[in-house]
Length: 64
Image 1 (tube, rainbow, N blue to C red):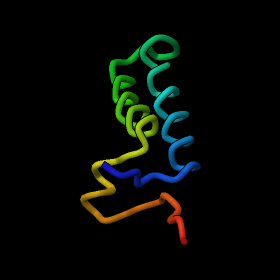
Image 2: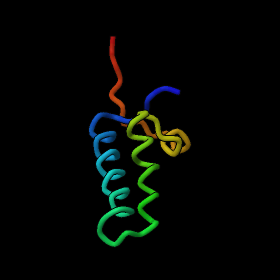
Image 3: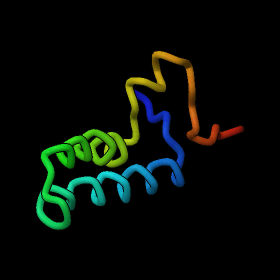
Image 4: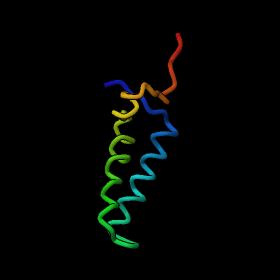
């Protein structure tokens, strides 16, 4: 599976995932924080299945 996320997209996903996961342990301590696993995982691997379905690609293309 080729990468379809750019550097900024990946960084934002990782930060968002960590923030959401922190809601499980601190703050309101809600189970909804486990949703943070999705953006964290997609940010770490650099591939988003939803982007594939809708044909979106934020990863810069190498020319040459």
